[in-house]
Length: 273
Ligand SMILES: Nc1ncnc2c1ncn2[C@@H]1O[C@H](COP(=O)(O)OP(=O)(O)OP(=O)(O)O)[C@@H](O)[C@H]1O
Ligand SMILES: [Mg+2]
Image (cartoon, rainbow, N blue to C red; front, top):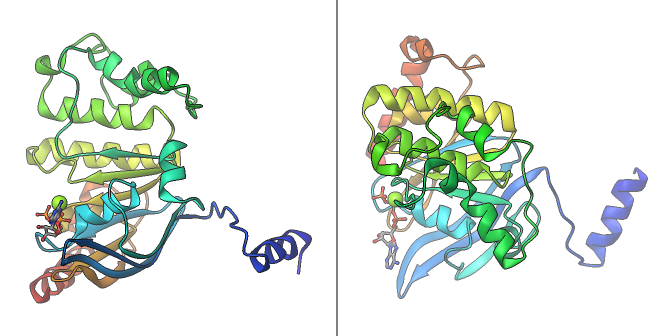
């Protein structure tokens, strides 16, 4: 046993929490209840740091609830949960993760650039030490293809552009974990395709872990290295499917027999849920 692992063992033996940064999120029998209703029932899961997971499942099976649990928006009724080796509250306070919702939720009176800057401003006002990324807000806007639109107000941008501003804002604190709840669900197919490619570029460039909820089987297979299929009533893990497709993924992969085989298998699984 190496010095490091024996030290780690000693700490574990003493029951002192050790921060394991190779696992982005770890759930053991995590259960969420709303009153008497069990939304998520004993979910156990390890999400390795740097992985891209997509989450599929019928409406109401607990996909959003799972992301809200990981992001400390709601508590677990039982079971345990760690995000980057910390409690969800500690991870939230340390700005270890960021959330992108279906609706971009930008402040309408602020420009694209000052919307991206907002988390930094809030952090400064609250005296929170924020992990500032190596990219400035302006560079992040450029990374999501919005160079030249820094001063535009949200109502002057298209839905896809607003969503890209929201993604740049989510990246400004350099999150190690990016939680995305149907971020492209309201967009047309072409814009969605473009943003799918862009989010893969961002994932490769930043090395962040991504948990991405979608209703689209095609999107789930195209983006995910792993697909978490949830079943409903109560929300449980139906299956975890490894997706092995050539990297970096190109849009044309969707026309290959292997891609279609994954989609077919997942469609059958969804019908059983
Ligand atoms: N705050 C809440 N109070 C009571 N029940 C809730 C609450 N939030 C979610 N639920 C219930 O928990 C279950 C899971 O909801 P959740 O929003 O996680 O589903 P989902 O898989 O994201 O669905 P969709 O695909 O429609 O977005 C649903 O039955 C929902 O009605
Ligand atoms: Mg949802």
